[in-house]
Image 1 (cartoon, rainbow over the protein chains, first blue to last red):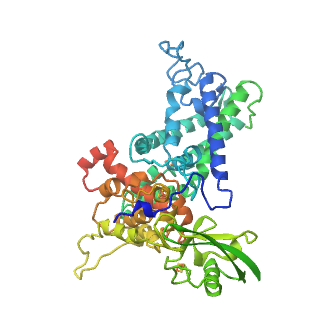
Image 2: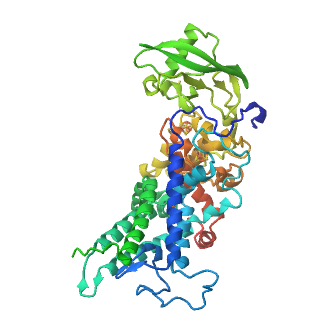
Image 3: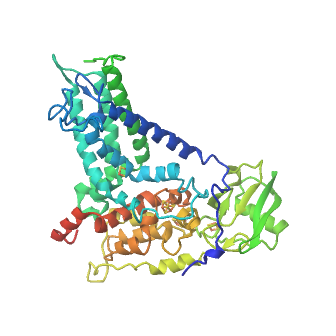
Length: 262
Length: 248
Ligand code: SF4
Ligand code: SF4
Ligand code: FES
Ligand code: FES
């Protein structure tokens, strides 16, 4: 049964016969994720310019406690140890979307390659000889993904509510460019979330005789369809959510004005 | 017609080296044709395994310019011909001679997977009824030709040599075809977790990338199996629910 280890060839770090630019996707992934992480961390810690009138940045939504009119439960909590770590409403909620993406099957595969060179590329030699995979601690924790998915589904509704709020102006109903940007973001995050492998599994993947559950079969088929483009939605929604924050921030700072269309 | 240079791995076991050969390439040729031509012209003793020349027997697996490929399905005009084209044996299994490797480990692995165990027949004549939409998923995996290119590219076997604790993508989808089969009643989740090392797959999808049958190994096979393992071993809420609904 065993393969005699000494009969196998050892492959050195970066050793490959590939001639194509195999390094390009991991380099782009590395650059893209790093930019996103750096920007998100910076934006989340600002505790300023995260709303502009009826527009709320998705990084700060839902705003549980905060100084904007969007805050659900009132002002910033007085007990927060501001001297140790300055308060920001984003800190209370960002763990959910961040955890969802961190444990996403697509992101996992991509960052294991780009950040950990495990492997650097397909058929390209690895730097380390030892390997644990997701079988033991710490990466066994990735199995928690479906719980983050439940939260992510709730966030779709919360972010949809923000679109509704963005249409409420002092003089009644209206639509601004910000509304459209928030709406585009929700559609794309929704396409990402409902194409999640855990969602797909729970929707119908778990059933071996799905023909007997016609509603679940429909949901499963829709989810599978989104799942085929999961990587695309992962990237696009990452940029749109970031752009929503940039847009709100620049409007709040007075650099841009949220153009009212209707 | 053009002269193309090949660098082909020649040797016995682990010992060997690349040797250069030149041969004429004509329109429509695949890599395996070139190898056969070289064999006929200048290397009569070169070992190469092949059978169908139609991408269906899975024998002619090798690494062409570093990528795991079927030699019979790799057209010469898809490769840059200004530089020598390298052909070497697959790396996840012991080399025997030249391009031929010993893939027998795979056949032993297959024997360890619990066999198909159908529910009692649906009709008095001993037959079953299935819906096409229920069998669609296993059918995708049944396209496998056992070329073992996915096993070759998988870093768990290729770089880490964890043949003892990991069955590889080929046998994960073999297990998936059984697990997802509408008639099957066996449960292989514990084996997947403990014996077959599904947790070692880090879903980097190289297997999917090289599969000549375009089987969506990772997304349709391995990840759904990982989710089933989560159902049984890592999801306390699901466990609780199943106490009340044992057959779901
Ligand atoms: S996805 Fe998993 S099985 Fe496929 S090559 Fe990567 S680690 Fe191996
Ligand atoms: S799954 Fe694809 S790559 Fe793997 S052995 Fe089967 S046909 Fe070959
Ligand atoms: S697999 Fe990507 S979000 Fe769940
Ligand atoms: S010779 Fe049969 S697959 Fe190539």
